[in-house]
Image (tube, rainbow, N blue to C red):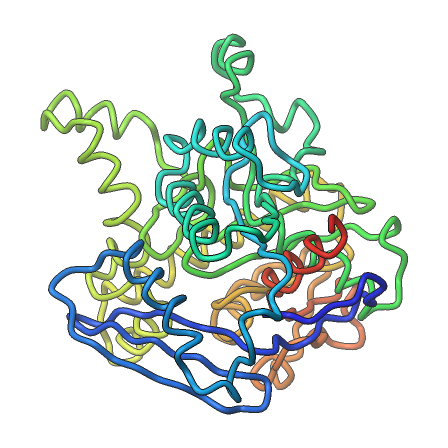
Length: 386
């Protein structure tokens, strides 16, 4: 929960409080923490994970916690939602109506992991806060400026006419990082060529020129592009045809393989968490080493491709869970980018805490570590539309 005035500056602020829901094995953990450091925790054993029910229970429990942790329920004025896929109809932040909900549902087949959960969140908020305005902010929105040659797939043109095109994702954070980078470097947004590296459980790059997204690695769905936690990113589509023909694998099983059984988890066989993979690699696990090396190889290739789309680069940003916290990934990714003018200060990289420049003084390209601020960005959009 954020407290923002209509004239709030561009500087991010800490939330008044935040709630987190996690699952570990058969345990469901709820944690609520306010800006003053006071915390409430609750743990329960569950037979199976039902995210919709769990989120509803968490929200209802929030106001059963001691009032000094989160304050009074009546303080809430607006509710914002991150919606991953806006499809062809929704790009700008918008007040949620029945038509908007339908448009979000219409593209749920494209982003089933995300849009279904987004609709559930909206409906749950309607149930718990029936009189409160709700705002939907779209991860695809920032990439609406992609030039047609970057957005259209080289299949039959009628694909594009049907709405099958590159949409791009993580736009809320890519756009925030653009503004934050300009602020840190005291540069005009219009003067910068930025490659934003959003590296978390989901990963994507954005090439940003003059404040506009001109290329990105994710596509029609969040499956495209870089290697991720449980998603493999770009693969030869002929592999899928081969699996269908030879193994008789159907759409549901393919969906599970691509969304849940690939990426860091699929290669390492251990975890989708980069921290766990790095620990195992450090102990000599060969598949963990391979998972890390594939991740870095594809990241380097993607950064170089984005630089080509921009015709050069002024700033590389590392953001999100891996980008902010893994000096190993940042260091390995930049090791082969000297041809772009990247020189990393190894000491600064090892000790980096966002928001900071970790390039050497002589580096032609600035390298920034920036904390993702998607929740704050969504809150800002809620205030702007209120």
